[in-house]
Each structure stands twice: as C-alpha cells, then as structure tokens.
Image (cartoon, rainbow, N blue to C red):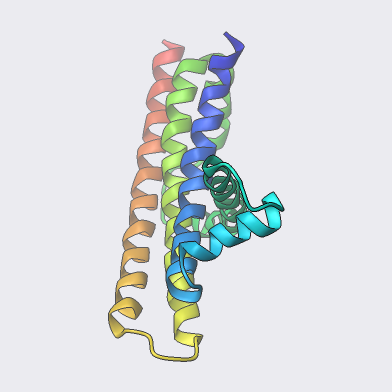
Length: 181
C-alpha cells in the first residue's frame, strides 16, 4: 500500500516537470539545433559510449533530460505563481493544503493533481515566453509568426495556470470544510 502513496508524487513530477521540460527540449531541437538526430547522437556517443544501444535508452535519456529541464524552469514558474497570487483573494491555502494531505490523504492526492496542473501551466508559460525572447535575440531569420505565437500561447498558459490555481484553492477549501464536518 505504500506504493499507492507514491503515485501522486510520480504524477506530479510527470505533469509538472517532465511535460514542460519535454516542451523546452522540443522547442530547443526545433529552433536551435539540428533536431532529433542530434539527441540520438548525443545519447549514442556521450551517454552510451557505444555504437549499439537499446532504443529505450534514448527515450529514457530524453525523459531524464526533460525532468532536469523542468527542474531548471520551476523556480521561474514559482515566481510567476507568486506574481499571480497577488491577484487572488484567497490566503492561507498552503496551510489548508498541508492539513488536507496529512489528515485526508485521498483528498490531498486529488488536490496534488490539480496543483501539478497549475505548476505545469506556469512552467509552460515561462518556457514559451522565454523561447520567444531567445528567438528575438537569435541571429538569422526567424518567422514573425513564431514571435507572435509563442508569447501569445505563453500568456494563455499563464492564464490557465492562474485559473487552475483558483480551482486548486477552491477545492482545498471545500475538501477541508467537508472533512471537518
């Protein structure tokens, strides 16, 4: 049964860290590198140190790389969360969330999934706007469409993060109130 308690943490890492990290890697491969062949050569030559390697190794190394990229982005996503929290009227949600995780683990696990989603949206917003800024500084021809699409999509992701955090706060309050009655 202890393995079931680990699942929300794995879900959180997959959603809040791997998805944004994989997005960052895909954008990097698409805009600043030669594409997937470069990652394959990297996995082949640097990580595996041999010519024959299992195909799963490249996928596993990509997921680990995505997780690490997601970890690097998370402090910037946290800053975005702090800024958007100033727009929210609810206070003290962290204490209620900790109480919920301790006293009602099932409800806390559901709230952890919502939390993973808003962290993911905030991370994606940071990545998309950051890549748009990097593309503006890049030497060479960059399509204006990308310079409009990336920050616009980043703003949408930021809004989704704000909206999902509001849902998270409301859910924590409702679960806590239901648990105390």
